[in-house]
Length: 153
Image 1 (tube, rainbow, N blue to C red):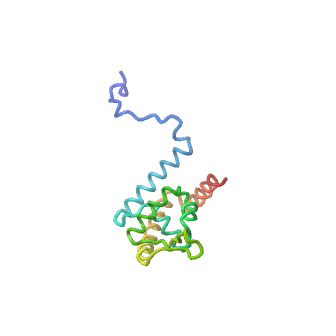
Image 2 (tube, rainbow, N blue to C red):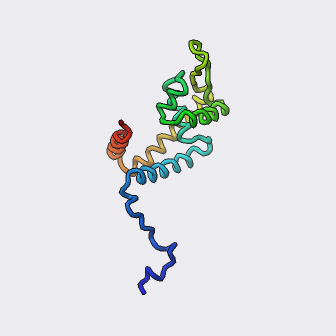
Image 3 (cartoon, one colour):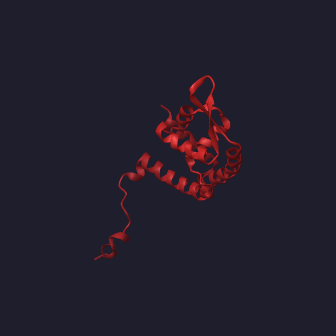
């Protein structure tokens, strides 16, 4: 008997088959690593990557409608409503009626949301630097370019 056959199955390395060669699998593993670090850095502010994305888009595009923000972030409209409701309940963002369209609402950061976002942006830079250090600045630019190619139709 060799040493491998004497070990418990839980002690043996797990064969991954073709998974490491699949784009979706590699992307998901990378996302899990990046989101875990994000969660660690931002849990004290109770902010998720999706919430940060909404705040960031509204900072640079005040007055967009829900459909515009959700489309820009790639968030389904049905998922965006509770996401924004949570930000609004915390006083970080608000809906305002659009005078020209009584059914529509424009979205804005509140002063509290602006203050929080300013603090978060510094930590996002630190978060990005952690992962950039692993692949280098050129590697980051190359990875971003390739990821954007995957997203383009």
